[in-house]
Length: 101
Image (cartoon, rainbow, N blue to C red):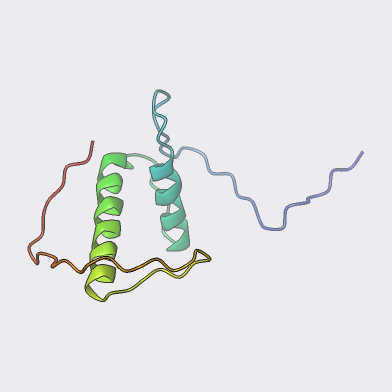
């Protein structure tokens, strides 16, 4: 019996890459990090992925994105019916360091 490749894209198996600890249930940061490395054409690190750093980095990026949207009064487009806009609040210009975890 001959097996046919039914994948619609090329699959490459990579060995010797950083993996999450077996007692950790947070694989999201690894998936997001590897997707970023691959999409940017960078090699995936084999050691020292620094999951905590990437968690803080992604949290910071999302927070800054939310602040920019709020400053420019952007509203996300989706299928939900429009909701009334909340009262505008001023957003402080100073940066705040937030510890996560």
